[in-house]
Length: 397
Image (cartoon, rainbow, N blue to C red; front, side, top):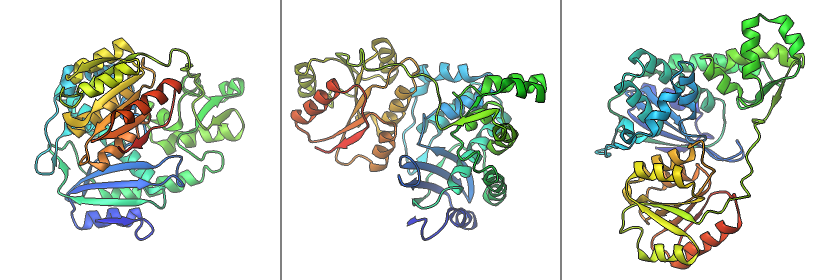
């Protein structure tokens, strides 16, 4: 089932899913005129109840890491990502998704399997994740959707009824609108501008929390995650101080970014995939353009070498499976000590277009679709050597 939100609004669509006891997957896409870039969301249902919801608009595991920080478990997630266990991917069979085929759900399940968090804590985390996603999609207009049947997770961690959730989120959105025009986006970052007045107004514990959180490097949404509160509650608490000018909101984090123009070009390129997909012609082209290719077939080893070599270019073949490539690309993007490398994805003519779209959302992505000529690869390499940062785009050979 495919449609536009000009014909049916999101709330009605969710209610339809509940009433028909739909089991499957809902893809939601909002175009650039609604937000700065096209956004994608995926929601999963089991007999009309939500089992999971994920956004492909930001770093793939940042949301979970923010929630885990409340429990002082964010380091456990880092250890999980660098372990070989992260890459134990189950194949997709008969439209049945396993928890290890989406990074965030994968991490949730492995944290549970390894007894890092309890079942009740995992359910609470997952409920927060789903509520946050539904808050976003109910607040937007326009866009398209694709509803697919019989695509669901097994095993499932929890299920959430749609009607009570919509009622709760609708009330939150009404409260959120009352904060306009002082607060207009969950991504705004508060900065403390008058600490003296604030210190004399609130208790010492609350003041200490605000001085840490309101330094301009955390958004309202991330502060809410850290404090295990919902976005509206946190925003309402800060609203009086924003009105008085004691707090200022910026549109994006003010953390100084490291310069990437110097040392942006590295001659090393990590090639990840089966030997038959990264053939002699590809390696020859890389060498002719001044690169030193390192060929790897083991994803865990590849992540280790990427951290070690700090390449500015990574060649990733989809022959290892689309979903593993998607997961691997997501992990590369969130390695904290790594500058954003250009990832060239080698795809085939029958590659899943949705999978390619999700990869492109990570940014700094180029696609080469077989069959392609060596000159196509050379063109990308030459451009990469002359530009330190660039936007991802698709090149169809």
